[in-house]
Image (tube, rainbow, N blue to C red; front, top):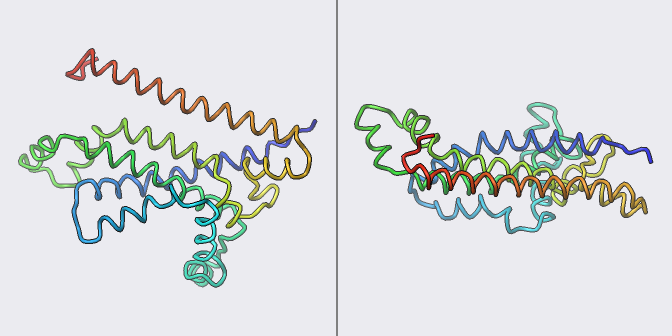
Amino acid sequence: MNFDYTPVILSLKVAVAAVIIVVLIGIPVAGHMARRNFPGKDIAEAIITMPLVLPPSVVGFILLWLFGKNGPLGQLLENLFHVSVVFSLSGAVIAAAVVSFPLMYQSAKAAMESVDRTLENAARTLGSNEFRVFFTITLPLSWPGIVSGFILSFARSLGEFGATLMIAGNIPGRTQTMPIAIYMANEGGDSQTAMVLVIMMTVFSFLVIFGLNRWSKRRQQGMTNDPAGRE
């Protein structure tokens, strides 16, 4: 059997690009939501986390409406940059970023909320501005939650199927990621290819969860043995 690794490479490209977007946007948003109260905060938080509970096909339909030829964002991108997101790798990246964003956001927000505010206030009394407090106090103390969110978001991006199929379609060599390749191989009766891809994704998912659990346990044991944080 001549195995085609193109879906694997495309999935990795999509996952890497999506997780970069998620980290760059998710951390500031989580920091703002963890430390600020404002009218409509609950509504904003509900919208941010909705992709966790919405069916992927619904998320894909919304993205298709937004970025389609007649959609508001689709027309804007077409008029300004002559770029079309639908049926492109960019569409797959956007879909993966949207569905994985809540994982990064929730992990980072929970970690930032657990940071002792007296440390942040002490830095402020010493003259540090909010930008410096965030990057020297909040962010370093929140890094375990951020790492967890990063790993989970990457794994979720790698396994995204429904929303990707809706907005990016199934174009071999261009938008056919591993989950879509599994579905199409199974539909086409190519069970060998489907099985190889299923095994690859299963092993990867297991290693991600296993590694994250082991890392969390070791960190907790290290904190128990050394409460002061010394090595």
